[in-house]
Amino acid sequence: MTTVSAALTQIGLLLSDGSILDDDDGFLAAIRPLDRANLVELARTSPGVTSYEVVDSGGGAAVVVAVGSLEQARTWQVRDLAVSASASKNAVAVCRLSQLGVQRRIYAFGEAFGLSPAVMRVLVALYENCDVKDAAAAAGVSFNTARGYLSEARATVWAPNLPRLITWAGVGSVGADSSGESDHPAAELFSLSERQRQLAGLIADGSSRIAAALTLGVSDAVAKKELAAVYAATGVTNATGLARIFADLRGLAIVTRSHNGPSEPHPPPPSRSLILTDSDGRRIAVSDYGPRGGKPILVLHNTMNCRGVDRSLVSALQASGYRPISNDRPGYGDTDPPPQHCHGQAYLDVCVEDIALICEEMRWSQISVIAHGPVHVALALYRAKPDLIEGIVIDAPEPDSAYGSAPGGMLSELKRQFARRPWAVASVVRILGALASFERVSSFMRDWTAKSPSDRAAMSDPALMMDFYRKLLPFRKGRIDGFVREQVFQATMGKPPTIPGTSSITLVIGQTDFMHDADENLAYWNEVLPDARLVKVSDAGRFISYSHPERLVSELGRLS
Image (cartoon, rainbow, N blue to C red; front, top):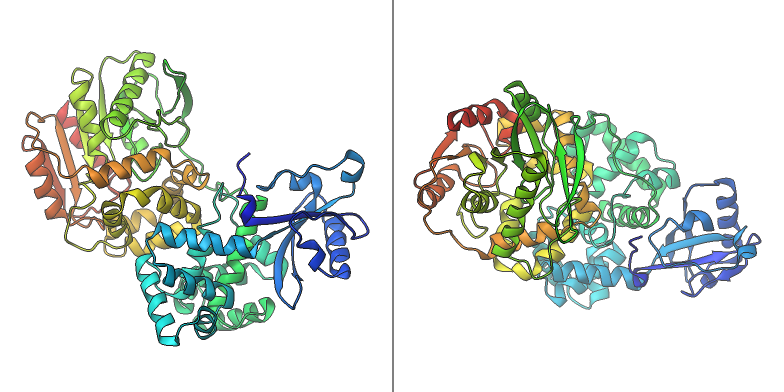
């Protein structure tokens, strides 16, 4: 089982009378005996679940802890707890995020984004004090200097305000499998209503009160009243303090696996999962959507998500006689990574051989391809296996990461940051993967698609939004190897040379793609692939397969 670094958490065991059985980390001794007895009682009255409580850890410092039976604690992402069988029957486990561990996590977060030590010192002080004036005093700098450092940090990590900065630094740096992140522990601990929980989570994530009210469909007056109740229940006085206590509880939820992620009100399109094995024993994961007698078409996932075909494209393809399949590329999702030395072209060679193995196992002599962005993979396949490929349609084709002049928001800036600092890709991706909760991604999507009506309409469909989110889940579990390799490749490859003879390739670009200027992207690929067909769709954005699946199918028909 993956565990959070032992330096980031502290865990101990109490006996049924509140006395200490295991306190290697030394934090239980600082808790008053009466409070320890209350923790034991909390575990006794809530068998089989993890509970949460706020306790005085000495000197008046309040900390949040998780409490559960020893059996429950064995599922947590913490160090092993070795105790005798007789002692374990009534033992109660208590876990907290260590103060030193929080500081180390925030420094690691800052280093991933290239923040200076001085900026990180103020950020740690803000996390601990939840007030800029107090943070300045704790860091030994002036108030204006602290404000300047925090503004620099916000700009670097795309945080519009301090609550989001606190949340990103606190939650994104926990590590391990973050799919258990949840705000239910906060609701339980502070007796928040469902609406109060949702409102508090939005505020902690950086929404304004007015924006949060719009999201929840209530008036600003109602949101103001509910937020006042949240502050009273949690004991904080501002949004930054709320973000801090929610970051701690979300971190503990991740450590204790209190929640298994979003429910599935919109299950994925039916598919058959296959696991193939190459000659080296490496597993390759494939989803086959059928029907068995359909014409095979491979759907290549984007560089920033994993396998899976959204329901709108599945329906359009099957209606036109196709049999869509999708595989995780090496190091993505459920496909094993290639050897450590495989980068750049060597990695692409493994991608091609995986696809060739799939076709061999399925006894397909020729396939068509739809690629959601990864031109480098599609071209590697086209050049290495020309007889295998009938035609390729690439929607929202990705140029190299350094290309483009138009600002395109967070994702575009992220790509450019990768181009400037390719060595930091893994650290940044790990943080962003940890932060990718369904609620957070949905909120970002509303911002990203604001100027693209077709994308906004598609991602307002809860079923399509879930299709999109589902392809991000492996990143929350720490499976980022392929993501990192492909982003590093895109960050360092530069503009490809001109490649003639690509008349069986079509590139489809949406006019309102929020990551790239459509005309710049067309010009880029026209130089690289002068013989390919380039199509600009005036009423489409980035998510063409979601909003215009029939257009992709139509372009496939032209290549047949």
